[in-house]
Length: 516
Ligand code: HXC
Image 1: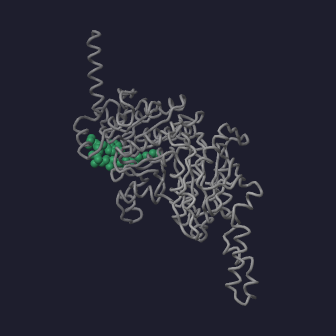
Image 2: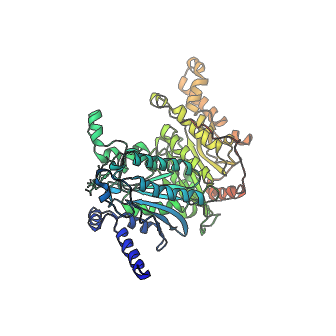
């Protein structure tokens, strides 16, 4: 073959590889309103930056006549590119080839870019859309999945790992996204479950649809598996881009700064009025976040799961910050099993990747009751304590109102190695709320009193004056200052600036044993 012919051969092979499972399969994908794997990659990455690897790779299976069914790339597109100018490794399962089902070869392609990501400190983004294990390959497919899971675990805390779920993701395949840091699912067209509706019907005689069992709506509200339910593929891709803008490349780098045109001394007079005089009235903690963050932008995560706690990213003075906040407008911002799991996992993510943590506190306590105790609120609530105590990133806490009991301890209190703790003058820091406290302390007195209600009301007033304020904690240095709400933005930025060079450690150990 002449050189010219060899070049022509490359061109032809490349053209064939670009067609994946063939034009008819691509047309079918488009007719369903979906993008192909390659289109998803092009939309996500900066134009012209994608370098594909293993485009000519073929499977090695001879079972069930598979030697006759071979497509270049074997059901997945993998490679390297740039997202907002920063390198990423990416894979996208190609549904046009045997429904993107996972062969040993396909797994090798994923493992290759994961290994490169880990070695080079570059995030890995996986776009899932697959019929699961390639049935004809049997154990090869299972081995391949498990090799991927192992790498997901080894890469955890080394480089950010993001999963988009754009189509089917069933059986053991769900465990790769589950082991990554964030999952973004496209509404209606994607689903994730261990066993599908048919098996559920056979085993449990339950009737359930694919959407009910594993759709984005379910996973973002009930199971908490998924972080964001995207309206469509474009929305999912935009969310991944926005999310990445807050993350560092790896655990040895800091998150990227952004230019800040929002004055750092900007006051918010609205915050001086946001706390209602009635201690049981609600207000929206997200307003406190948007009033204080750069340009009012808050990138929320897991919005619809356990909304009594709010998590996400924002910038303060251009610096990326992870935010954890009780939400008084949902179940009074109480801590329970789900909100503890949600909060703790996010805190640990931020700590892995050097993202400082800002905590806003308005919490009446942990939720009581049999459902919570039977469900292990002790074990799960402990996750919050564990996550905050082990974290070594800069930490700032603002108490806006209630901070009671165990929830005071758990919400980034000074005693969990938090660097700067401020309270608004409306802070109420005590073992418990006045009503409950007085009923315990003055039960006998109330019985003996002529007018028990008036007696208890008077005692409640006494308790509130003595305890339901920030000054008892401030006297002891557990609160570093009581600040005017309107100046919160400036105080947060200043606080983080003062501790930006923080160096803290945990004792040498193999790893801790967080209560799971
Ligand atoms: C091999 C598969 C396949 C698979 C689909 N195909 N799934 N080939 N292994 N797992 C092939 C089909 O035969 C078909 O080939 C082509 O892909 C497109 O599939 P369709 O069924 O025509 O597409 P669609 O109607 O869109 O349905 C997609 C689907 C369905 C919902 C994914 O194909 C399906 O239910 N597949 C089986 C899913 C499954 O049971 N997977 C195993 C899960 S167990 P042709 O040649 O006709 O185009 C598992 C264990 C993992 O994953 C454990 C890890 C630890």
